Length: 331
Ligand SMILES: NC(=O)c1ccc[n+]([C@@H]2O[C@H](COP(=O)([O-])OP(=O)(O)OC[C@H]3O[C@@H](n4cnc5c(N)ncnc54)[C@H](OP(=O)(O)O)[C@@H]3O)[C@@H](O)[C@H]2O)c1
Image (cartoon, rainbow, N blue to C red):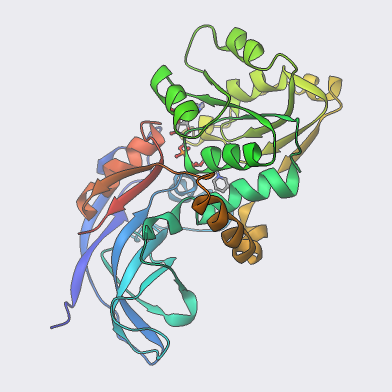
């Protein structure tokens, strides 16, 4: 028998500062009616992404969200009932389903995925991977011999960006929080070096890790880390501005950084919005699949279990405690 209701996560309060689990509620929801062309799906993995912090604050460029509404986001799901001849029960799909256990979705709004490692469609073979590829190959145009510096290096964007830069022949240095994360960035993702931005010696260690200065800086965090990276730019450096982890939890935008080193280095700054590259996802996936098979591209996942674990899992991400792509597995 088809289940008619399921659980979903809604916004209770707009968080002040770092979100807490009580900013969210778990509610029961009825499945909407089904029309020809629809798929009824059971979520298997929910994607937790930093951009959602801007969405729940009411200041994201692409989404609006009112109190009481289900948190949006991508999910990997399995079809349980198909009303479209292209799909059958058990097929794996990825789409924007939000933080809920079940969904009715039009078949034209999903992408079919393989049943091997399906969760990668939310990370290395999904939006974060595409972001990394676009920044490294389309904007920074990384070439052999470049020194490429990448912040939030243990996450799905940073780790993928670093590995693609390595494949292209660059020397790659990561920035991450804590000695353990830095060791993992070197050991698991093959970066040449990784510097701990939480260490008192950060600025000194960064200079030592980039003795020939930085040709490409891929910034995922902003703030003091961006300021330190700018101080190490080589002449004509390219800087890709991808994310602002340092300020997503702040209600008021902090001042700075001082951009004088950008002038001194005659550097080029580029803003990255992944939406501009969605049409190129098939091209990226074809290339990334080859790299994965050749063991040149790896990933890590940070998986919590059950819809009820979703609010706290998102809070962990926004506290920087995740290692790898943040996911919730729905049993
Ligand atoms: N421009 C676009 O279109 C686009 C698309 C996708 C993602 N993004 C951005 O890409 C960035 C990375 O996304 P992701 O999904 O790969 O996330 P992620 O790396 O899994 O998580 C973010 C990491 O940032 C680090 N961090 C948090 N606060 C920090 C701070 N104040 N200073 C330095 N590092 C801090 C934390 O790791 P540590 O332990 O190392 O601190 C945390 O684990 C985010 O800023 C996201 O918004 C942009």
